[in-house]
Image (cartoon, rainbow, N blue to C red; front, side, top):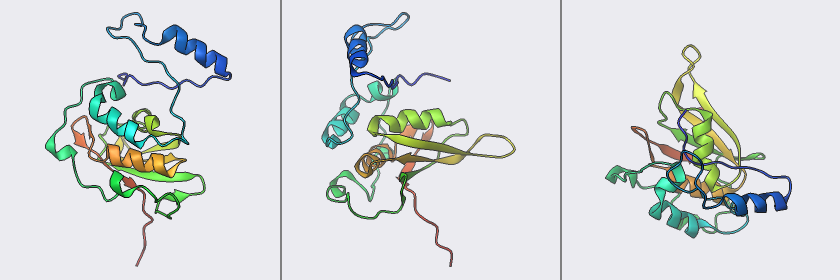
Length: 183
């Protein structure tokens, strides 16, 4: 598929990571027109909501490797908006499981795959699982999928940032997974 311009590399030793940063940050790879940014991933324990929002507002092309055009419908109301997230870390929100927080992504295109979900949600924090729901006969995406993240605040920030995001010709709806109740 097409590169989205984001990669995560895990090193066994900190010294190896520091060497990679020193050697590759700011350099242009062969065939590239722009230099790459190589840095440590954000510490999941630090509060980075402001930095993430600033990054989203000021350099969307850096996050996904291509131009992003903001349409009016991108900015929709989300009940889990950033203003309402502080102080909710201990609240039991639907979608919580012992293995993490499950996020529901709706309105994916037929060609969506697990890789695009990793690339979209990875910058927000630790992702433990992604699943695109596929049609049994065609193996094409049915239009929705799930991402599991380990940290509530990171999951909530991903939801607040990606709900209403345009992926191809689709506007995504992103929320915590809710449990179905049968009556």
